[in-house]
Image 1: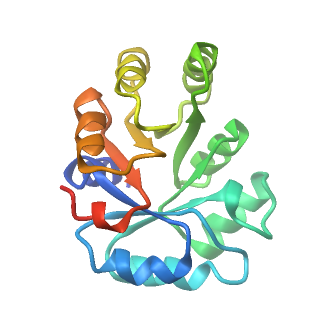
Image 2: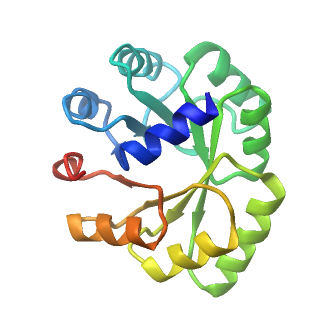
Length: 189
């Protein structure tokens, strides 16, 4: 499954980042292959995940934003066994290992506030070995390039991307894909 997901990220570099479950159908009507669910709770998330997978698209749950499920190994196990997304997104390093042991794709989300945050992220990524890394904000090509040179993991740029030009710049700097919440960019590439 890992190789197939990575191939989809390369072939379809724009990822629909959804903050409202109502936007799932909009994303399914676009040429995106991967969808990041940045919303939901234990009661309402299973249906959209199933709906997305029936449409033969990939779905990743941001577990830090998912309400009603523990942010621990048991929560990840529940997500993998009951909700069945293709993978998770998290800022929590301990959940990366849990996801990988459950056989789902693990995306480490990192925020860059300063150069120390970059160094810390590099150390963490090397230690936990996620399947991919999402960098926020994604509008800083120089940081994307630096991370591309320092870690050998697929990079996803996200956050504050509002124009097609910014998508192109992130991809040119070394990102494999770009997650965007603006639905008019879901047709970008």
